[in-house]
Every structure is written in structure tokens, then in C-alpha cells.
Image 1 (spheres, rainbow over the protein chains, first blue to last red):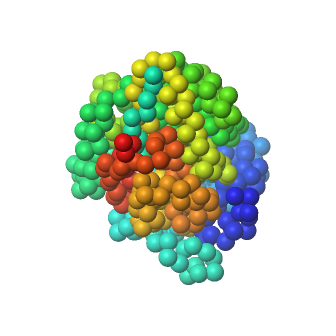
Image 2 (tube, rainbow over the protein chains, first blue to last red; image 1 turned 90 degrees about the horizontal axis):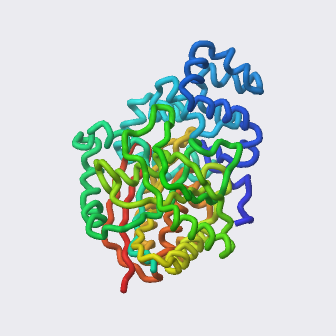
Length: 131
Length: 280
């Protein structure tokens, strides 16, 4: 198992493995998401998003991707999808909406792709074969 | 004496819980999935276990990134359904079996599996959705439940082989328990799904079904699947399937497949269910 390298994972297209690098980078971002499990925090965030974000030690880029609902940006800034889902819940966005947004599709297009059997693994295993 | 009488594997997709709770199970989108759960419910009713050991993962509900136990076992008398941001699911409180939990925790640690012990813990959809899948709407869950949480959120999760060996140690501990207790073990999560990034929505029906086949035909192959293969072939979140191997490891070397159901999609996921009995 130790023979697995970060490069092998980074070769998988469109995938942001939540590893030590992203855990370190995104620690406070994910702790911000975690805070949204409490109803009073959800209210406070919705009333003043920027002000609430300022109460966490986040970088400007981390604050920006949250304010812009840039979900792939959130992943790139170290956000983990299970924690980021709490932002989606706070904003009333469905998981399928978020998944569509991350893969460049409308919610309807994404839903249809799933009903039709999902995204094929063919052509999606490695960046070299990715269209 | 305790005995592990059977094993069950199932996905634990949160949207399945929502569809169940909101009465959407007869809608065209959900009906084919829920129709496949009927035979497993009938089977479980007949088996009528005293305790279910339920192997699942927490989805950033109880465990923030502050502490990330690789294996954690609940030792409480009860566990409340967690608020995951939309309020708790309207399902019964989960009754534990503190005596058997403590026995397992002690045995496993002395057997060199370093468990984190949870005196208090809410349980999220990872645990309550499998209960709804296998029991339907009930006022009270028909058995006690011991939650066993596995880290599959932060890389690296424990290896499939480690999970399998944990299953073996669980079996040994259950068989050394001094009360007559009939136990079913459930491994949950998966199957193929990726919830994030440009590759979100990945499904690998063929891989999933080979995994289901080999739970009975070739578990030795499954023990050796590297994390990289799960992530590449079944989506980053498909790695949850290592938790099915805890269940498989707790059964005999030879098992028979009693029932299987597989359906795409359950929201973002290839949803699988399998029932395994020891092949006496």
C-alpha cells in the first residue's frame, strides 16, 4: 500500500483526494463548514456571510470561493465534500445541484446523466486518456 | 455464547433516507430501488437477531477534523439520530448493548486493534439509513445496535485487509461472549460513487457487481484491492466499500449468497445490497 504515490492519485482526472496536503490547507475552511451544523451559526452566517467568515482564520481565497459558491474552488482550497455539503444545506442547495455545478452541468442534465447510468469510468481513469 | 449468524452489506446513501422518510418510495425514480429491499427485510425478520454490529462511517457529523479515529466503537446505552444540517431524521433512537460493546472494545484492543471508545455519540445517515433499508418504518428498532465507525473521509482509510482482519477479531470476540446472543453484522457504504469535482457522478456497474460476486467467490481478491483502485475505478467516495470487508471477515471462509439487489442510481450512487450466510 505504501507504493501508492500522490502522483498516481493526482493522475485521476477531476478528483481531489482528501489527503494530508488538503487537510492541512483546508483545516479552518472545513471547521467553518462544520460550524454550520448548528442552527444559530447558520442564521448568523446567512445574515452576514463576510462578517461570519472573518471570525475564522481563512485566507482571502478561501473566503472568496465560499462567497462565490465556487465548489471546485472550495475543493482546491482544501475543502472536503462532506464538510462543504453543510454549506449546501445552509444555502438550500441539493447535493445534485452541487455535483452538477462541480462537473459543469445543470442540475437537470446531471440528474439525467445519473438516471441513464451515471458517468462512465471509460476515459475517466487517468488524465492521459481523459478527453 | 455469542454467535455471528449472518452478514449484510448495503449502501447508506442519505437520499434513500429522505425518500423513505418523505414517503417517496412508490415514485418511479425510487420504486425499483425500494422494491428490492423487501426480500432483505423479510429475511432479517426471520433471522431476528438480538444485536446488529453496524459498520459505517460518520460524514463529518460527530467527527470534525479535530480528531479522526480510524476505528471507533460505541459503548453507550443509546445513540440519537444526528442533526446533519436539516434536523435529525424522524426515526427511533438507536438502543445499544453496552455490555457487548465493552466486551468487544476490550477484546479487540487486547487483540491489537486499537479502537477509539465512544461513550457518547450521535449517529448520522451512515448508520440510520441501513436500519431503514432493512427494517422499514418501525416505532422501535427490532434489535440492539453497536455502532462501529471507520474513517473513510481522510486519506488513508484502513486497508481492506485490515478491515477484513478486524472482522475476524470481532467474530472471535463475539464467540467468547458469555451471554447467548445472536448477532448480524452489517457492512455499509458505497458502492461506486464520486460526490465531488469534475468527475462527480462516476458509476462503475461492472466493478460493483464483480465486488458483490467475489464476496462469496473470491474474498481473498477483495482483501488485496489497493485504495488507488477503489478511487480510480469506483470514484473517490467508493472507497467506503472497505467497510463491507469488516462484515465479510466476520463470516466463515465459505459463505453462500442468499440475496442481492443492485440499482443505479440512488441519487449519485450505485446502490448495492447483499445478504450472506455461513455455508455450513
